[in-house]
Image (cartoon, rainbow, N blue to C red; front, side):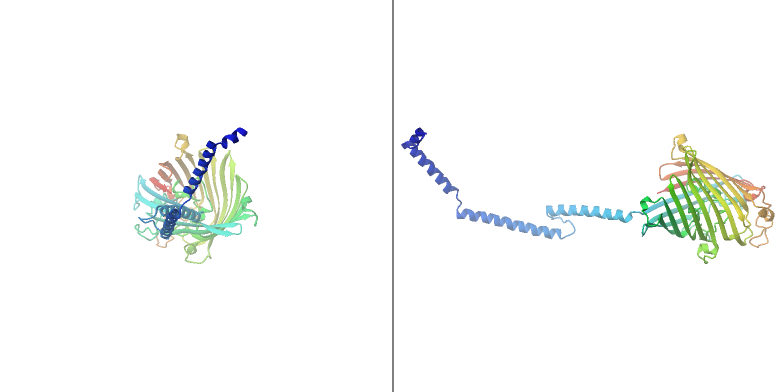
Length: 482
């Protein structure tokens, strides 16, 4: 340590130390900015602040406009693009929320038919017709834990089809639709149905999510067959059987006991109790009251009515699903075959049952209890075989047979009955036995929306006339669904 101190205090050490101190002092003086330097830096900062303020003002001005212009600042353009994209997402979300619960369906049915063999005098041997249907289901609001829906159905069409050749009871074309009394060129859209349904979970005031039974209330203009006499196999002429005897119970439909207007609709109301506590087994009981006569077309009050009560259940037999329905009806103003109004009543059964994976069977039976009708018993049976049997899963083959028994009253009066009072017998033959109906179709699907169905029909003893020629009809149906 003493050596170091002596070396530092030597003449050379003192000189070196003095040089080091001088260098540090000079460097410190050189690093200290002058007033001129500070002013230059302040000027630069001021210019940058002014530019930032100008850019901010330009950006605010640009953002105040809705659209992106050609001289848009880059940042503004980006912000507007992001805002526009966000707004588009918001509009899409709002649109989806507004459409939630809305369901739409549209279908076009076109059918060309021709009669085979001998054609009765005055009867067309061929006919082409079409029918278009659009349905819209809307949310109907909530009442406590109950919720409602609004159902609308629009229909239009042209062409009456071959209807009922040789005085047959059953029409060979249930798809035809045209306004009565109008020329074929008139295809005005008709509001076919408009009804409201309220679904009420049970028990009242309970948690809807835990409910296993509920009530349904319907009121408005409706098709009674949408709620009664349903059938999963034979219920839709746009995709299945097209002979009217197979679409609904013949006593109610072609027999006229349902009492609807010329278009097939009527004002009415319905209440139903549905129990699903033992799913897949379900049970339901429903009652409907509908206007009939002039009331069905809103030309009279609700004085005359068609009432129907139905019990139906969904069961599993043979390891597959089936539906079974039993109903009774009463029409206070039915129409007898001689044209007079009278009270009519009857009972019916409608059932459909899956057998195996790809076969569905159906059967209907109706028995007239009251009223002078042309046929008082009707039995229809049939089956549909799925295309999976021949590696065409969406296709199907349908076959059905029908038997419409002549009533004793009509058997006695058919030779002379004159309902229109023109002194000419309406039928002019002695009706006996039964009208026998058969139908065969193949439904070929091009894709999910388009199907083509060749169809063959045979009616023996049309109208119960054993002397009349058999009715043979061939057709081709095009169905487009959306």
